[in-house]
Every structure is written in structure tokens, then in C-alpha cells.
Amino acid sequence: MTADGTARTIRVLVVEDDPVAADAHALYVGRIAGFSVAGVAHSRSEAVRVLERTRVDLLLLDLYLPDGHGLGLVRSLRAAGHGADVIAVTSARDLAIVREGVSLGVVQYVLKPFTFATLRDRLGRYAEFRAAAGEASGQEEVDRALATLRAPEGGALPKGLSGPTLEAVTRTLRGTPAGLTAAEAGAAVGISRITARRYLEHLVTQDRAVRSPQYGQIGRPELQYRWVSGR
View 1: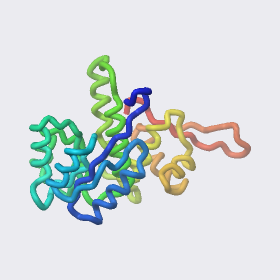
View 2: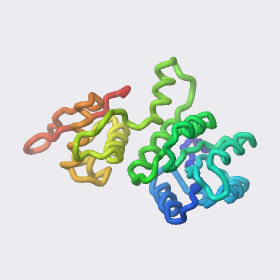
View 3: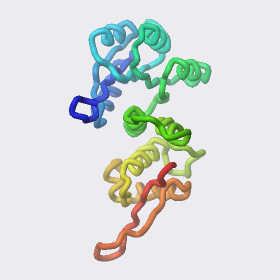
View 4: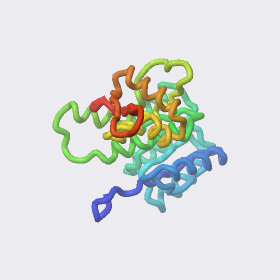
């Protein structure tokens, strides 16, 4: 928080050895409200230099760097008392590496390749988790805070639905307590009303959203979708 009580922009250091991917990741971060790019580094040593001179809240960290493994960078930062959070952005699927990252404080993993919608959802969840303050009233509230970091649950999606788009629709619906119509959800995510409705109906079948008719307009009432609190 800033002195006037407003949320402070989360400053992100993109650490990625591929220049094209690094530029894309920085572009994605710059498009997400509440986040700004603190710098771009293409190696572990370059990342260290940026961290020495710039305030960084979050590392968007590739694990395979030309001068060392990304977790080695995290380990050295923790040893030096640096508290920046880390989201690993990687093609690595070795669960032993995932477990090691968790032990070092990596808060999320995003597997390459990914879309803007995927990163927007992960950063949105991270921002929600980071914004939690005060003392939890009990176990349920602690669990709820930790759950904000997790992607939507569920097994295989119905044919024609994609995980990243579902995550984007879910995030949009969760962030709108008053509810959304399919047209409003589609406009917010960047998909058609018909496509948005398919995703919203999927959330209803999963008991993660409810729908009700919205009256007050001339003609056929629209369906209003709302996130189920606590899911």
C-alpha cells in the first residue's frame, strides 16, 4: 500500500533468455492493471544486477538460463534475504523441480507455451493473494486465501473449450460480484457472446456459478451469471 492507502503497483522483473519470449512476457505484464515491468534480464547475472539497483516485487522467472538454473538464483536471493516472490515460467515438467521450487517460495508455475489470458489469470490471482491483509478468523479463511493462487479445478474440458479461456472467464466472473451476462463476459475477455455463454454454462454445470434471468429490458430477458461464493 502507498501512503494514501491505495494499492501499490506490483513491479515485475522478467527473467528469460529468449529475447522474443522476454519481449512477449514483458508486453503481457504491461497490459495487466496493477502491474508494471521493473526490468528484463536475459541471464542470472543480469537479473542480479537489476535486483541490486531496482525495487522488484515479483520475478517472472525462466528456469533454464545460460549461466545457471533459475532455482539457483532463487536460492541465492533467499540466502541474501531478498523477499521478492517468484512465478516460474518454464517448459520444465519435472515434479522434483516443482517441489524444490515450492520449498524456495515459488508461488506458481506457468508452463510454456502460454497465452496472455493464462498469465493474466495467474497474475490476477497472485495480486489477490498479495492484497490479503489482517488476521485470518480461522482455517477456512487461510485455506481460501491460499486457494486464490490455484487455477480453476476440474478434469478434462468438454470438446471445444480451452483451459486458458476458461481461466480468463472464471477470473472475470469471480471479479464481478454483481454478475455478468454472456455478452458482458465476452466483451471483457475478448470472445464472442456465444463462446462466453458456453464457458459460463460449463461453470454452472460444475456448481461454480449460478444463473438467473435479468429482467427490465424490452424483449427476452438475458441470463445473468454469478460466481458461487467460496468456490
